[in-house]
Image (cartoon, rainbow, N blue to C red; front, side, top):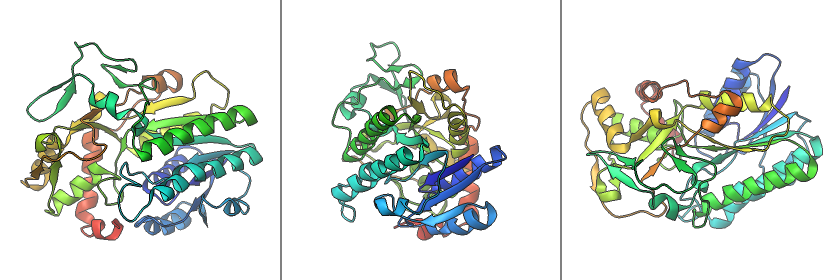
Length: 356
């Protein structure tokens, strides 16, 4: 089986390439990346020399860059700007966001159409309605928000977390809207041109080697910054760090993607939630307490000002993926954090090397 991974030099793309090659014999991988993200160039040698990935420099925004790509059986689209603040800050415009996260996907879909290749589109938990998320009935412990399971819950959320049927009504952020539109385009192309499409709405991925920016990987950034005694802030929500997310490792995502590319048949469901779930959920305050125990005390400052698009609680319900693919999280979050901590200790300059 031959695979194409877009964004292959990113944290998720490179992790998927490594994991898939380890899981199955007979897989070959072609990867394409424009190397524009700081840190991505650090994965080039590992992918080429250590893993044998055929690496091609290209930009999915350019249709002509697909002309040199070989025929493959499946495309795994891991190329996107992953920041929920993308398009609203200086240095990266809203037009560039649309070009990266939506128009680039259209080029990927045209390639799948021409090659008769299946597609796994990596999407995000941020396709969900911000108003619906902030309106969830939440309780609070001393250091974490939690869902009030005794309250009346809206459609698409349960004690297990957020499912695929939760509201996607705008606003969802410019970033979330490009990913939701890409999902729709992928489903329509697959139906119109008869190729299989799987969409995975991923929670927060984290692990060693993740690039050093808080908006692209808050758990990894926090651990690295704590280890280096860099200034840290609890932003919004009274500056207490109670905001809570679930976390999972790319190796667990690899297991889901592997199952999907070996299940090409049509099914009624094409979109799945993928995340760490309740067992792998933690607040920033509790993450900082873990870091205090691991590296010694380092207190964040409190910034009570709300920030655009921030949400207090999201945990992904992956029970559909468990039912249809037998998929379960294997790596506990403590193991994920320890892997990152060891990476921080052995790479003390990582934030400088991989940050913009």
